[in-house]
Length: 95
Image (cartoon, rainbow, N blue to C red; front, side, top):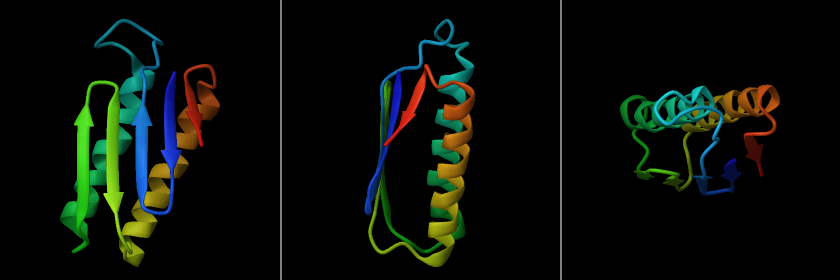
């Protein structure tokens, strides 16, 4: 199961969906794509500083005092993750 954790200063993702074979898991792919898009969007569309770590089964994005643009991007990521969790509740949880 993928666990997406939101706090005031970071987003952490842990685990694997196990919804398909490695390399073909559409749930993992969806969450990974949303996360990587968030990180690159904040880097390229804002002047905010972020720290980002991506490893197999783990990702973390840390931020401090996000700008309005970053807040919109983070909210959009949250909406996307909620959609994936709603479609695949046995594979994704959001806290």
